[in-house]
Amino acid sequence: MSNYLVFSALGLYIFLLVLFTKLVKSKGDNNAFFRAGRKSPWLLVAFGMIGASISGVSLVSVPGWVHQNGMTYIQMCLGFFAGFVTIAYVLLPLYYRLRLTSIYGYLAERFGRRSHLTGACFFLLSKLTGAAARLFLTCTVLHEMAIRPLGLPFAFTVGAVLFAIFLYTRKGGIENIVRTDALQTFCMLVATGCIVWGVSEKMNLSPSGIVGTIAQSPMGSLFCWDASSTQFFLRQFINGMFITIVMNGLDQDMMQKNLTCVSLQAAQKNMCLYGLCILPVNLLFLALGVLLYTFATQQGLAIPEAGDRLLPMLVGCGALGTFVVFPFTIGITAAALSSADSAMTSLTTSICVDILRIEQEGFEPKKALRVRYRVHILVALAFALCIAVFHIAGSGTIIDTIYRLAGYTYGPLLGLFSFGLFTRRRVNDRMVPYVAVISPIVCAVLDYLAPLLWNYHFSYELLLLNAALTFIGLLVTSRRVP
Image (cartoon, rainbow, N blue to C red; front, side):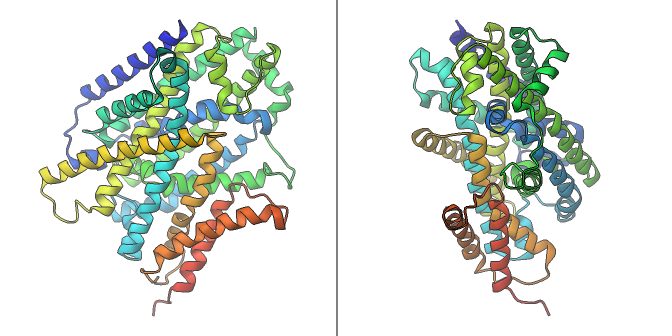
């Protein structure tokens, strides 16, 4: 029965989402697709960005974090807020002053065409792998709960989800996404609240009982002050701050939404409010994790090795009751689509604007529109290919995988932008691609050797090391401006 309920909820939600985009009138031109006419309400953008950044991974992976690390993920979330403030008052003024469609246009103005392409290519690699990893987890959960029991292959689930995203993003692009993300964020938060209520009902807990259960649990610790631990507060705070700067401030996906706001001041208010909202939302996910593990232990259920699998397992086996199935399906679908749709749109934008330069090369409007449609189709196919790779290779905890990948792929971007913002030196544009590729390779070697030689295990600070190596490489190959 629950299989058909999941399938029905999934189909109904996607149908309503596509219908919603039909009701939202969009001109469908490239200005609407890339910039939404620069008239999006900042409050709507801020609310919608919550769902886009959280994704289906957070709904199932953040609760799984607590089993080994307690609620210490909140330390990174505090760093996230510091990162959002930095973006609002350091990066956004730059982007608005240059009136950028793609933020990597800054690299072209500061360094040159090869640096511009290097930045754009690292973004494409970063966003494609990260967003595909998030979507892979969601598709896996939906497939196991609803599609596989019907005898359909995993490829069908992936194809159906990607086709649905393509349907409602192909015309309006970012103009539609600003609105659909707000709708999907609302659905995800309501669904999460319903799941918490469902679990507490099964455990016969009142609101004060929920707080007491979390406070008494060994998984309820918020902070770690052991300097030798990978969860040490200062280490996690700094990592969270810089992860936010690169995965938001240097990411075309997240910045494209901000650049649709009417003014810089509106975009700054959006970014600060968004940063504040991330804290209680993730605290809700962590609290849910403590309740889920406590409930599973009380019921004598086998705890899955991968934390990502706990919530789907409890929903799938009916331990939380039929009531939770519908909101869980809506929540994870809303979170997944709000992340993947904006990723596909930003990838299409970056390819068209940064690499094909359809606005700079004077493409005729009809030709530019055809090129954008074709690129959007290719991006959807690239997503499918990446998900297939994740499916074949298997995966552990996806949220940890995403952050570690970010250390390698976003590090050169952080190094490039830092060098441009904090020095006045002129780089050798031809050498930039080599520096950007060598830096993550050196990081990979050090990551492998550090435990063997120095008994040190790198965490997400690989991002900072990668950025520092890129910065040093640029410094060595640059020259002082007369």
